[in-house]
Image (cartoon, rainbow, N blue to C red; front, side, top):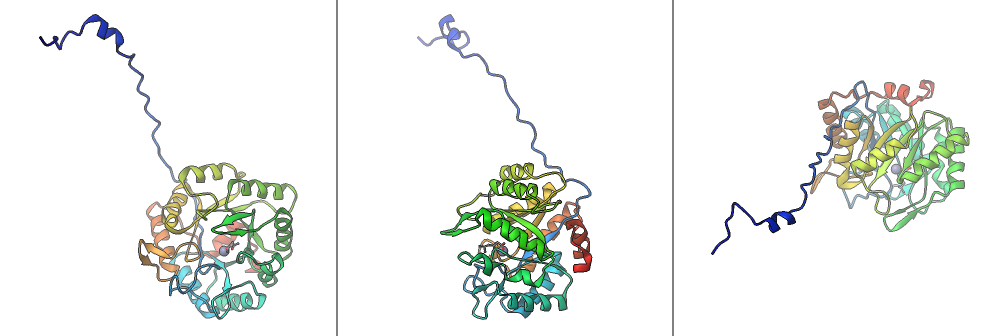
Length: 308
Ligand code: KMH
Ligand code: ZN
């Protein structure tokens, strides 16, 4: 005979577990800070991408200038600049930077931020070539990382030497942080008097061998920077679009471009960096963020306008 379903025996009732309280996680809402002007940076060439990867890579000074102007029209206020030799290999030559900078200056009023990172394997002295052009901004890489299968070496003495040289050139440093510890290194430089406030951080996310992109990572990195500092996200490859959008939502700045990502969509090459800038700008406008022009960006970043 089947047991009655409605009335389990007393021994069965006694074995049922205590009901657990239902815990509802707090709602996850991102509120874009109002009144937060957005500085978009275009990294138009870099040191690693080649014409074999994409035919849309600018190489000559004229191509770099044309691309810088297109990116400015699309909403970029800053051009993160590397240069190439005629054969496409990366260079940190003062002369090539000088040529590219003057061609860019003929066409557009963007802030030019020269790389002091160059390419892996370059000596520190070689990397500092563009500082002789006294750029408005220059990158300061704040630590050593595995960079794919290579090592991007930035020893603590080297970082300090580069910081001094950036200051001597009259340039504003952008602090490239590929790991959380790099932020702490930048804070040490501030304490040592090698950097002046406000600091400008670039969280570079997704380099194979360094920190990977996620919302938690961005929130944590942001939590480590001092009040008054600015921050931006540059994410690599397929992470570029979602991390750019996250940074824009969170009130940060953003960098896009072929240096970090050559695709507009999966399998669709971006025809230069300008379409990537235009897409980021459209997203920002949809959230009501103001995209600033170079002159306003100069004020926000503390760049003396006389040097422009
Ligand atoms: N090309 C990378 C090894 C920078 O521009 O300061 C370093 C880099 C960083 O691109
Ligand atoms: Zn770079």
